[in-house]
Length: 439
Image (cartoon, rainbow, N blue to C red):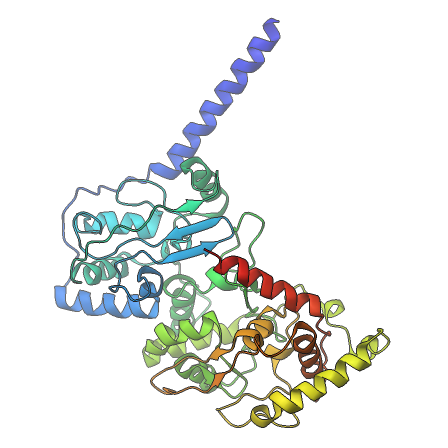
């Protein structure tokens, strides 16, 4: 049985080598967090710059509990693997970052390690903030240190085993994370490079818009769309002309959408409405134009959902019950929708969007439509559009069959050519919402 002992010894040695490799790559960043050298620059200018970056990067959206003190943490961030609670970024010495040096903060945003040295959960987008310049990281640090100290220790993360363990995080990071600052593309102009830096790093757009795999990892430059399972919203592809690409939009329309939340060809809703309200509307004019330049230049690519998942109307007409569903949908639309959206889906100016030719209506993924029709909501309330019109919730008044029918009617009328919606899809969304809202 000597061979068995040798085999076990070899396996043990390999495990030790693997563990050592993980430690070396994930914990050996070489940052001296005890160096108390203050950030370079005039303090007031640093705080002002950091406040701008925190705002357009939408930091407070995650790090502020509803009704709580800004940046004091505690807000739950729901994921497929459990709930992560955002940390306290105020300079409270016991529960916040009051004892952090500028190097400690730099290590967090660049290497994804907390003040205690532990690997941070990737709900914090260190996969993107690693691109920030040291100057921008120092400005953010200066801003957060200028806030009033607020005592408040967030609850412990509630993650299923083994996702919250340090070794699981080390393996995930080995697969999906490589620290590195943004490198300008010499083949592009300054506006494109500034836009790329803002989209990839500061605003971390691919946190939502990158297609994730089974371990929630992604190619962080990928903007091909992703279903936000925990939030039950779909972040559309920003490179697919059928979804959210703005390659053929005038720059002025892109600016308008990111500044006000509405545009001729689209409007922000769901999580994107919050992003516009709390973040993108505050971009400077030059930065907003840079973001538009970068997004407009993204090369078109299919989302991967393909025409086969969006059958032409003619292919659906033979389906049993399709005609009756459309007739029911037409009646529901006439009774509940036409007054605002028009008899022919033409909409009414900025108040109520057109449904005819609307990409949000014909998306292959129907979760956004179902969320909107069932639970209503508002577009982003912005300085340029402070009183958006709202969509009433129809969950209490329409049953699953009626919801499916009216959506089928809208998706197959006035030139729209998308697949029908089944009552079972409506029922599934209702069920998932009830589960997530349960105590």
